[in-house]
Image (cartoon, rainbow, N blue to C red; front, side):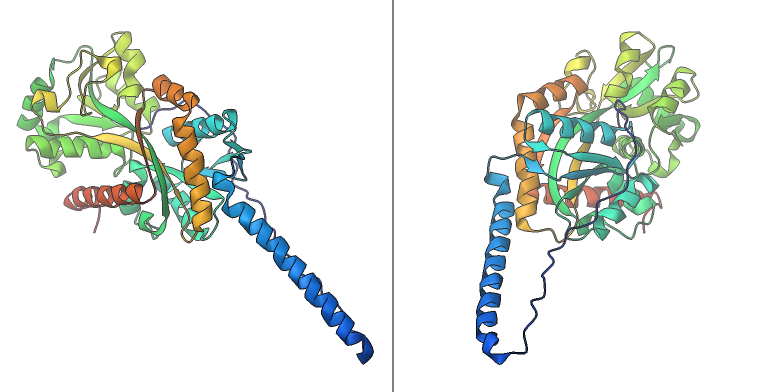
Length: 364
């Protein structure tokens, strides 16, 4: 599930494209004037072509010019305040503060688990100024929402961060370890409700399904209860309406510190600094590593120059002290890869998600 911090006014309007307008030069009827006019026209055409060439060159080298990128727009495919929204606005602020880009516009276009925004991104073919913040939840939503638009149609730009999941119980839970929980769960999978702040196909849904597979429970037997974000999941957990919750660990840090909930295990490869005494699933004998991640894709058919502008800006952002500070602040794990490497990661993620959703009957 995605953490929630920032909120902003939703803005879906986008500016009209500016097109070059060529002015017609009238040709006089007097044939004596034609050679002069032809020369004039040729000169004007040459000047116009040179001007266009200069503009194109400037655009093409913008990624390496050292000047801040301009005109970038970052779409968030869910409501303001969610994890994608937080990541996008933090990234935009860092780029602005570090003078990597100026006037970065972040706007929200929620709907259908992120696939409304995905469809818009695909429809914006060739628009190199637009990109979409996304992550694991959008991968799953393309299947559960039967989206016509797919991530394979987009241009991969960069993966930014990863965030470990956590298995959490209320303070009065009888399960003291992840082993205790798994033993009880295997004995009665349908009778133990697990809650998550994602719709089917989202990270909080995929985590318990993959955990079930790892411990020998049929995913179809999992009693999953979907909540609309952490704002609904936490009261359900505290009120013991569910046996345990599966979500991003950052959602529960305040409640862990106050003693209201206990984290039985985290899903990362290594223990989490903020939860030093909490074991990983692998350290507890369960062969599963699960991370929610967030990245950025652009519309199909953008130019190599525009792609490099995005990659260069995000690379400079990633290397900045401001971004490192934000990683620490939000508990995000640095997972930065760009271009083709991110594209391969997307392909692998798509296959893994499709496999488990097919087993659940949620994907064809």
